[in-house]
Structure formats: structure tokens, C-alpha cells
Image (cartoon, rainbow, N blue to C red; front, top):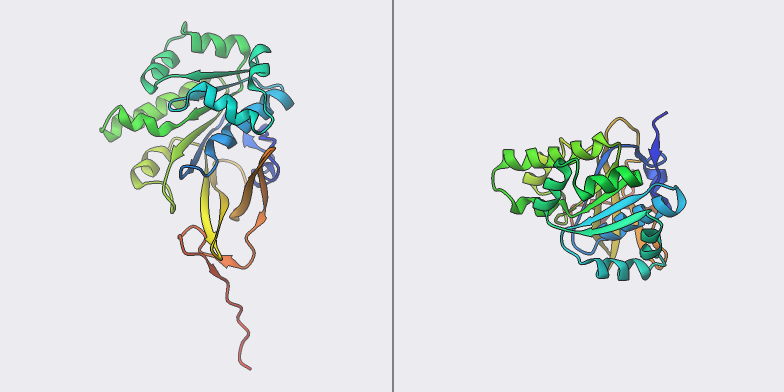
Amino acid sequence: MTQRAKTGITGLDAMLNGGFPAGSAVLVEGAPGTGKTTLGIQYLYNGAALFDEPGLLISFEEFPYALYRDAESHGWNLHKLEEENKLRVIFTSPQVFLSSLQSPVSPLNRTIMEWNVRRIVLDSITHFTRLTRNPKELRDMYSMVINGLKREGITSILTSEGGTVGLRASERSRLAFVVDAILLMRYVEIESAMRRAILVLKMRGSDHVKEIRSFEIRQDGIVVTGKFEGREGLLTGSPRRVMMNLGNR
């Protein structure tokens, strides 16, 4: 059986057939505010607190104090885990991160080795598009990051900004080939109310739930709540009721 990195997120591990395959690279893509960073922090916090798997949160956009504050709002004490060498929050740039990943004596690689880091979240991989406009160079960067993490057996989440329908065509072509799994997080409007949806678009070498499911961000974090009953076209931006075929009367 494939070894799993459980997320500890209610309902999500069931969609993933037990968790992410250990050592895989997972793209979590969604519009701003859908909960990508919350999912990443919850994945790291549960890994360190529940499964004894130390992790790193690499942020390219949010300062650590904001991440600590957001985590605390869900009851996740990141400072305590840092004191126990189970979690570390690093604010850096894509350039510095790439250089650190390539250097075996960098502080990043020393931390990975000394702490036996098993989980990493990069928030967000979209920032790499600022380094080059050359599609081949960008894909090489993605491959360099993912292969560098895989060499250490790390199960990684890479968040990416996207629209309401799906990954941008350029992002899909470059990332879809190098990641092992893709999760889509979406807003959907149903009867004039905004709800959140999650879909496992692919998971290489493993079965997974194919349905689009609803989720909520509660005080204790993300909870996947169930199916969207009687709805279709959820990711088109115009969901509609499923019409029942009653036949001729």
C-alpha cells in the first residue's frame, strides 16, 4: 500500500483515499480567499502536532506575524511548535529560495536535514512567474523546486492563484506535468449565496474521490462537509439544478 501523508482535515483525507501519497507534490489552486493558505497551515500544523512530521511554511507574500495571527484564530499555536523544532515559518523570495534549495550548506537545507522535515508548503508558487517570461525557464524552475523536495522525501503543497473556472492555460501546461496531484478550491454561487467547493482534479498513482464537494472554514479550520446534491455545472460559474427526467405522462 502507498504510504500516506494525512492532512488531518475532516472529510479531505477521505477524498484523498487516506491522504496525499508520501513524497508527492500537490498543487492547491484557487482564487484569493478560497482558503488555500488556511489549508496549507492546517496541513502543516496537523502534521507536526498529530503525526510527528515536522514542516516548513515558506511564504513569498505574507509576513510571518500575519500567518501566526491567522493560525491563532483557529487555535493553532505555531510559536509553540517552532520552540519544539517541529515547524518553522520562513518569509523569503523565490530567488533566495531557489538558491537555498540548490545549496547543500544553506540554512534551509540544514533545517530540512536536522529537523527531518517531512512537509513543506510554498505560498505561493505563482510568484515564480515574476522571475522569467520564458516558458521553458519557468517550467525548469518548477521542476527544480519539486525535484529538490522529492529528493528529501518531502510531501509538499504548492499554492497557486487562479480564476473561477480553472488553472490559467499557461499555468496548467507548466505545472500539471510536474506535480503529482491537483486540488481546486472554488467559490460557487447557489441561490444567491456564496459557498466553497473543493475538487481533487488528479492524483498520480492513486485513486481518489471524483466528486466536487463543499467545504467550510470554521473556527477549528477547514471541514469538508459533503456533496452538492442536485447541482451540476459547479465549476462553470453558472451552477444549475439537475432536471429530473419524469418521462411521458
